[in-house]
Image (tube, rainbow, N blue to C red):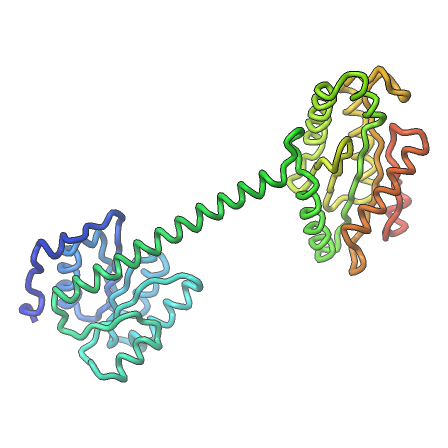
Amino acid sequence: MSRSFNALPRETAQDSPDEHPFTVLLVDDLASMRAALSDELRHAGVSSVLQASDAELALQLFRHHRPDMVLLDIRLAGMHDGYWVAQRMREMEPGGWTPIIFLSGLDGDLDVWRGIEAGGDDYLVKPVKPIVLAAKLRAMRRLHEMRRRLVQLSDELHAANQQLNEMVELDPVTGLVNRRGFDRILHTEIEAARCDRTPLTLMLCDLDHFKRLNDAAGHVRGDHCLREVARVLREVCVRPRDVASRYGGEEFALILPNTPRAGAMTFARALGGLLKARNIQHPDSPVGPVLTLSGGITTCVPDGATSAVSMVLRADEALYAAKTQGRDRFFSFEMQMDTIAQRKL
């Protein structure tokens, strides 16, 4: 057996140095075979060799260490053979891929076919020649590096796409979510609230007589006021899923998941008070000396008939009602709410 593991020529072992740590799980029930193969693997540049003598230990090492390659003997001591081990390993990594090379003294076509069907990627007949082992190792390391680079590129592409989506869905003046982002998030939250059977509140807010402010103070001052309002909205949207968005012009929209009607009215009163406390001057407003806002609120537990369009229309109707009643206030229409929630108002 020792003649089968003659030292590999050093120039072959060092032909393609690996830039990243490479771990091999070696599974064989013969200690002498494991020792010989382990020496050859280290000589070929493998940084870490894990050894297992039976199926159970092999699966345990595979699960905890996630090796980059597996050398797996077909005949193992105990109840399970290498085919069974390979199948269990494949079940542990759905969507992943760790190369598995079978080792066996059998070289029949049926044995090769069974190995591939069990989840193996290659097949070496024992006794293994060092030069053949080194060649298989280099091939698998190349595949490993290619897969690593593909995963890295995929992660970078995903991050770039996510950043691009965030930029596309961001209002450049206020830094809030824009209309495009609002439409997407509202649709998502309706689906989530429908599934969880929880209340969802939508508020449409309009800055009172904002056109007069723009006309009197100019658009630069108007943009400054919009950014101040955006800061207020961000301050009141304290929960992770609360979303403040610029719906368009001087209109803003708030999406408040898991917020009943009574809670929405409390939120609205706090928002109006906080904006007044900022003391944003509006000398040409018929409502008062500082900038105020009017809002329409709709709250529901979404069902199959609820849509983003229906919620926006309902909130818009409530906003119109708030304006006709004198502005500087919020108005709420009831939408699929029970009487208990109504009495709490």
